[in-house]
Length: 586
Image 1 (cartoon, rainbow, N blue to C red):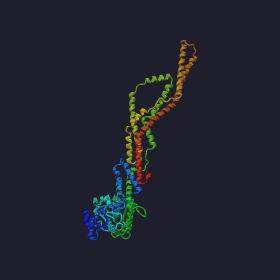
Image 2: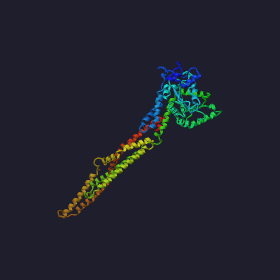
Image 3: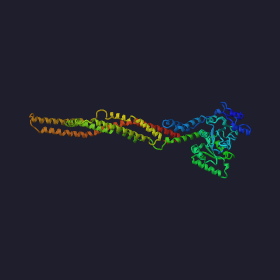
Image 4: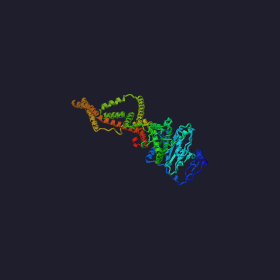
């Protein structure tokens, strides 16, 4: 850019990439210190050079699996969760994909801190030259400034939105000898700056860098804004976090150790694991950027940190962990979920009651008994029943009103059954999935009462003729014989009365008595014997209607609920993969 070219000469012996500008600050340093200009614009390296051979970032199998699971989880949940709930997970996926396409040989580390903490001075000390302006004016750093210890970082800085005029290079060591080779250091504006745009830049870049060095000073290391807004929410990113206590040269005697211990205590309260005794966690150091005390230890820690080339993957893994924690309330409740067999049976029983399965079975039993009585009863009793039925008054209007009342009651029973089963199915589910279960039940219940009414009309009795037991024809023949005895005895007596037959009262009277006593006795015996088959016939009619009602309810309500439960279990399984615990999360 013109700004970079105006401030210094290019170095032909030091290859670069993109536009590494000098800017106003660089010109001031050149005017004061003289010598070679370390901030001159370096021309882009042609294709085929070492920068073109940079390898993109590669995630290990576990992290790839977790990212795939998170992507699947977001896809499965879009119809059940609002976009705001899934926004952070989507951002993590986008950033993971964007970072993977960029250099895996560079580690982007941001230096962040409050006003007056000395972060810009630390930035200059690590770079070995004055790159970021320092002074008493606040805020001093108005825009993020980058310093890269090796080629190939232009795309990373493009992603951060840092222009070429704010990109620098140190000059202490050649690229091949620098212990910080691969480091891209970013000096951020003050996170507590009075300028809103400065704070916005800090928040934006902190979400994109691979690691953060938090610089605190003895006066404001316990600042509530720092701990509540940044450190505590980023507690899961401890492995990619450095916390350095700067300006220890201002503390007398053992005060530096006391402040450092108190800082560790505060970090522990924030939930930040401290990387002590070889354990993974945040690195906590004390130093003085002004005197150089502790800078060597920080350089060594940074050099080892960058050489491992694990920071980008660790950052993405921590982002996935944070997104999973935020999503936990919408996937996990700690309660048992599902639709029990008892709830299914109760739902089927309620539908059976709504269609009158029990009443239909009782009606079928009475119908069987009535047919048996008609077939095996005495003709005189059957004649009397026929006469009695004909004299019964018509009650059509009353029956119609009763039928309407029964239909209304049946509809209420169906609605109550649907509400009950949906509440039981949604019990223990997170709110979005419980709501989805209730909505699925309501959709399925539309038209269920009408379907049950139609079902009851065509499934009231078993198909075909009612089965007749083997003794039925014998009973019918015996009853006919008793009737014949009565007729023969009566005709015999009548013949004697009119003198057509010789008098002999004994035989015809015995015949009539046998028919009169035997007919009711056979009818009573048949009625007792018919109870078992009639009961079985009624139970069969009730069973058929119950099964039909249960099948209708299963198809229209239970199956949609089961589908929603299956969908939830699928997303729960994916959530377990995201958290890295697999089946243990289910």
